[in-house]
Image (cartoon, rainbow over all chains, first blue to last red):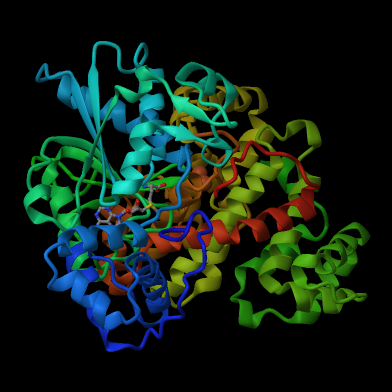
Length: 303
Length: 290
Ligand SMILES: C[S@@+](CC[C@H](N)C(=O)[O-])C[C@H]1O[C@@H](n2cnc3c(N)ncnc32)[C@H](O)[C@@H]1O
Ligand SMILES: [Fe+2]
Ligand SMILES: [Fe+2]
């Protein structure tokens, strides 16, 4: 499940009529800013998110709320708060184990070999749309586990970004319950977490120090331009509600941010078919990824 | 080769039937074949009555054949025949793994054939089903050497044919070709068994060989391989077979490979159930694709 309500929230006080023209304007605004498009049948999601904000602001009409989002002095802050409501992401640790297998067996050996030649023994990873941090923490555990093996003599850094301030705050705190940890084994729990009370675990300092969190809106071209030099990008279950044009734009940014020979992972059922044809689709055991072929590659494919 | 051809009485008529396009097969013929052998008939009935096919209280062989469809019945017959031909202690490759892979390839080849509007999708099915018969030859005739191949391949997570070449000096493609010729399968099918890894062995690889080559790769990448985890990294779009096919079947270019791959995962239950009905359920080393 992509972007949806993870925790039950109190029902909004007001039933909102989603055909109100103000909502259509809000939809366009949200789309312009975030790339997330609420089609007709998803409009109810948007109105229920708006309703929460309207309750908080003690507003009664959508038109008033639209005004808060567009003309009031604090409109940027309000828009951010609305986006925080809209982009609550479902996620958990080790959600895509086949991706990690592909990294260990094929991708890392391939990249290490290519990069080792130039003596730059450093790898860069980016989790774009990291939500509450499960994905980058998983990656950090995986890489730490390889530190003495595959990655001996190498350093790595992980950039983890999202648009949702609340999610980022939770990600930085690194406190997780059983739901998030359900696929994390005891050995890893003991090694990388400490007790946080209330049946929760918190990422320890070693694990935390591997990840740098930042707020990046994938639709923000200025920021997207400056994330160069990535070896592997994860953008899983984020672009599903983006429309084609925004998806294309984001994918182009990923392409130019990746090193030649780098890989992009999307979520399990996501495809760039008819979205992009610069990346090459590669099948690994149980998963697929998109590959930025080095310019020197002769036509006719890998290997 | 002869030990393989001392087959149950129904093998020859079955092979004759496998050579025909589906629409030329008379259902009575199939019912006869199935009924000829009590154990086979019973298995058909059991499968037709399983929840997968809606549990409709099937009592006659004829209605079982109708419910299962000719494709599936042919597969079942072939699987059961091979089960007789190959003594239990000669199965080097796990029979469930072998049939899951073969049936998986059959389905994937057929679906891909339909997508690109290849004119004989049934033939594509058969090509997928039979492409690895060489593995059976190696099991029966070169049992110990082949066991060694499989062990090393699993240990190194390497492609089986590469290890066969190193250890035996030949591959299941070579032995597959011999059996296919011995069974007097069509030239196209012989080519498929011989060239499904290396299309350059053919002067002008036909669409069947290309299709099977691709679906073999896809199946192995979707936990329908030879019963061990293989290190895979496949750029299908850059594959020679893909390029040959696209040149004559432009519809291939309109195929969303990610979607298609998920379709294969979706067919997994059917494949496993059909295979288990022939060989009994066994836990093959197959990780669940989620
Ligand atoms: C379903 S979560 C994915 C979490 C994680 N990647 C995974 O697969 O488990 C989707 C995340 O995408 C984020 N997102 C949506 N639109 C975004 C945008 N325009 N810029 C940055 N992040 C965005 C949401 O805030 C949400 O946290
Ligand atoms: Fe093969
Ligand atoms: Fe095969």
